[in-house]
Amino acid sequence: MNLKQEEWLLKQEQTKDNIILDVRTAEESNDKRIPNSKLLDIASPQNFMEGLSLMDKKISYFIYCRSGNRSSQACAIMASMGFDKTYNLIGGILEWKGEIE
Image (cartoon, rainbow, N blue to C red; front, side, top):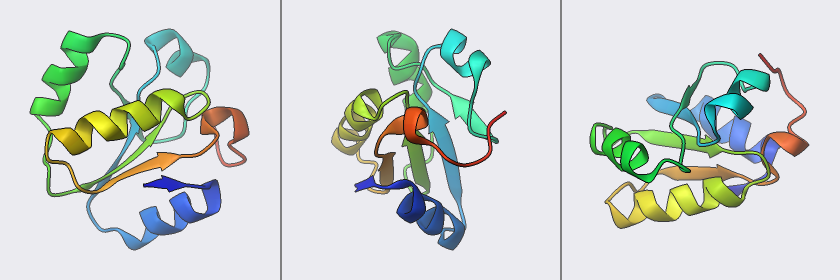
């Protein structure tokens, strides 16, 4: 599901078990990132798929990248693997108005 920042944050607050997933590269993530996010680089397909295979499909995932394209792809991949609670941040970190680490 694609959500604007306000909707994304509200849904996250309302969801008990969730993970914020950053699907950018390590370099991008080191530059700036949303607090408490876990990095899983979609540009490294083998590592990405291995990382997903270890994740709990029952919890919610709030996914972002630089602009929203890679995170949208990540949501589609995750849906095909049986993850049914994935939320893509429209506009990615480029349009993020919240806290940054």
